[in-house]
Length: 551
Image 1 (cartoon, one colour):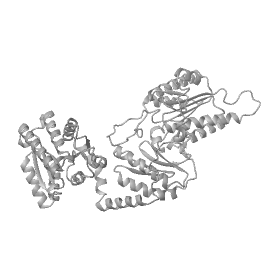
Image 2: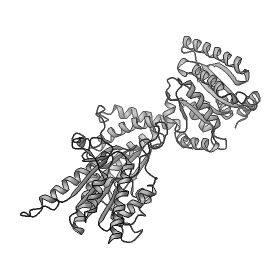
Image 3: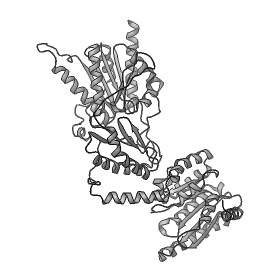
Image 4: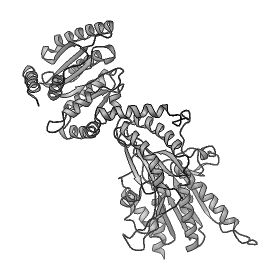
C-alpha cells in the first residue's frame, strides 16, 4: 500500500469510527440507480434497526458533465433522499459526496475498497463496470474478503459468480440482501471471492483487447456463423415421432407378476432422473444450472434393491448413464454383478468376474479426434475466456464445454452461439454437437444409448438365450434411442428366426418400455417420478429374494 492510499484509509476509518462501511461508487445519472440504492438503504435501516448504529453508507458520485439535465435532476434526487435518511436515522449513517469528472483517482478508489466490507451497485442498465472487479482484486490476500452486490441489469452480474445478484427495483429484496451480506461468515466470503479472483487476475486489459479484436475479425469473416436463425435441438430427428398415444401408467403389480414367471430377464435403467431424483437448482445459484446428479448417491433403499436384483442369477442388470466412467464407478461400482454404461453408451463395462477389476470397452466410431481438437480447441478457448466459470473437458473420444459454474443466463446464451460455431467448423467430421445438462458436448454422430442397449441384448442372448422379460426405464430425450433400439433389435431377432416355427423367439416376451414423467415418448408406459421407480425396483428385488429363499 503506497503512503497516499494508506493516508486516505486512515482518514476514512477515523471519520466513521467502528461502523461497518457499505461502499458505493457510481456516475451521477439516472441509469446508475443511485436513488434506488438510497431507497433500499433506507428500507434496510427501517427493517433491520439493529444495524442503525453499526453501519454507514459511503456513497460517492461522479458528475461527468455529458448529460447535464439528467445529472442535475439525479443529483437533486440524491441530495433530497440523503437529507431524509439523515434526518430520520442520524447523520452518521450516510456519507454522500460528489466530484466533477469521469474518474476517481486510483488511490481514492483503493482506499474506499479497503475500508468497505460491502460494495453495492444498483444500476438500472449498464455495460461492463470495472469497479466491482477492482474491488475483488484489491481485497485479495492478505486483506479480508468483502461482498459485492450487483444489479442483475449490469454486465458485471453475468461476469461475477461470487457476487450477490439483486434487482434494484425490488427495494425490500435489496434491503434483505444487504443484511445477508453483513451477516455473512468469513469462510463464505472467501469462497465467493475465490470464484472470481482467478478469472479477474488472468484477464488483463491486453487480453480483453485481443479478444474484442478477435471477435471483430471473426464477425467480418464470411466463413463465420451463417446460420444464426437456426435453433438448437437435441436429437430432433426423434421428436416428431414421439407421441402419447397408447401411453398408460405402469402397473407395478403387473410387472412384478410377469417378473416372477420369467426365467431370463434384462433390466436397463438410466441413473440421474430415474433411479436418482435430479436436484433442481435455483436460476441464480451458479453451479449445476440444469440439474445435479454427479457426486450424489442412491438412497440405501434403492441401493439394496439394485444389489438384490444383481444377485439373482436370472437377471442381467445395467445402469446406462450420461456420467463419465469414474463418476459412475464411484457411485455404483461397489455393487457386485452390476453392468455399467457411461457417457450415454460411449463406454461400457460388464460385471467384473473379480471384485474391483472392472474393464471398460469403448465403441469406435471412426472419428479422428486429434484432428478435430485442432479445429475445435481455439473456439472452446475463446468462449471459455468470455465466460467466467466455464471449463473445457478433453476426453479421448470427445470434447465438452461446461458452464455449470457460470452465470446461468449468460452461460446458456454463450452455449447457443458456441453450438452454431462448432457445427459450422466441424461439419466435415461425423460428429454431433449436443446441449445437455449445462454443457456442450462434441460426440460421435451415431453415439446414443441405443448402441449399448443393442450390444447388451445381443451378448445376453449369445450367452443365456432369448430373454422373456425386458424392463427399460429412463427420463429424458437421451433415453428415447434406448427404447427405439430395443424395439428394432427385437424385431430383427424375430425376423431372423427359422421359418416354419409356430412361435418366434420373442412371442412370449414381457416388454416394459417406461419413461419417468408423462410426456411424448417412444415408451409405452410411464411412472410419475423417481420415487415410483424406487418402489418398483424394491418390489422386484423382494420378489427375487423370496424366490431365491424358496429354492
